[in-house]
Amino acid sequence: MKKIILKKREKTLSKIEWFVIFSFLSMVVSIIIISGFS
Image (cartoon, rainbow, N blue to C red; front, side, top):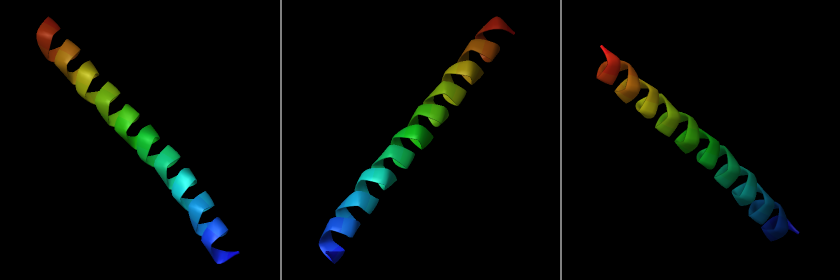
């Protein structure tokens, strides 16, 4: 039972990690666009 809970936690953690990576990438892209225009 504990192993199943751990697996579910890993899946949710990976979703959070993907969200953090996506937001970080979008921030970097916006910085590049802003610096490119200025």
